[in-house]
Image 1: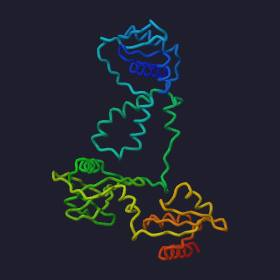
Image 2: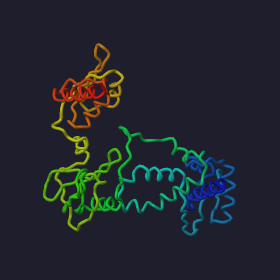
Image 3: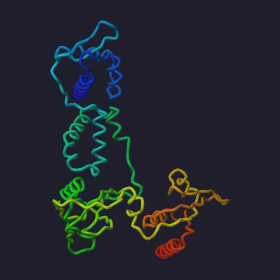
Image 4: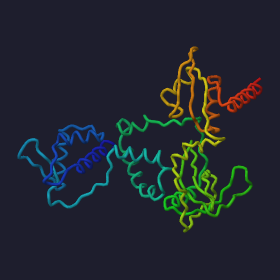
Amino acid sequence: MATNQLSLLRQWNMLRLLPRTPGKIAVRELCDRLRDMDFQVTERTIQRDLIELATVFPLTVDDRNKPFGWSWQKDAASFDLPGLSLPEALTLTLVEQHLGNHLPPNTIAALQPYFQSAARALSSVNGATLSKAWLNKVRSIPPAQPLLPPSLDLECQQTVYLALLHDRQLTLHYKKRDAPAATVYAAVHPLGIVERCGLIYLVCMFADYDDVRTIALHRVQKAEMRYDDARKKSGFNLDAYIASGQFGVIAGAPITLRATFSRVAGEHLFETPLSSDQMLSATTDGRLQLVASVPNTRSLVWWLLGFGDGVEVQEPAELRAEMASIATKMAAAYA
């Protein structure tokens, strides 16, 4: 059954590749393009398919000169084929897996038939097909210990996304982690959506205030889109906001970090710098000396602690003292 389905899928795509007369395409070119679509086929098979298909569809062959060229007849009725090629099905499957939280609800809804078609196209072929096998060969690994994402109210998410898409205000019922009941924010002005480590955050402003805040979307218990237009913040840039360290929990003004890493712990910084002005040099004892300007965030502290005794912070003094205090408490806990 899978073989018959694959043959049908190949023929669908073959018909889609045929131009209308006076255009034409040779069997060899058809073969190359079908192979690019992950159909392993010979020119002889294509030739046989075209002859058979020409008994059903209004196809014509120009045999006046070699190579012969195939096309739809000039007066053939418009004909559309709903099938997806395997590369198209693979792409749509990856879009659904990895970009679901990055697309507005109307786009997701519009793509659902295509996602379903992609799933059917991939399920109709065996696992040895290159495109289908690719799904088992590629993974994205989070930078930290992976955690299961919190449950999210999909209706609330859709409302928030629609308000962001249409630049409309929101009324949100938001329950903070330790609060006994939800707080109602009557006028929320959405500015952006950020996904970090499986959590989705709404970047926004409240009421008439101009300071930018972030709230975790999974804590929103109820969301209503208002008819009022949302306010814009002059000069706001989502990328700049992220780069400022807001999602690492700001602990103060940016700092110049000076630290010594063991070779094993710090060698990756040659390829993935901590900042654009990073300076990394080897010391006489084989360790690595780092100097970099970075946001002062709790994430920085957690990142440094992850290296254990593979890093020693020299400056700033406040950060060095905090690291020493944490190390002392850890030693006491494990004593």
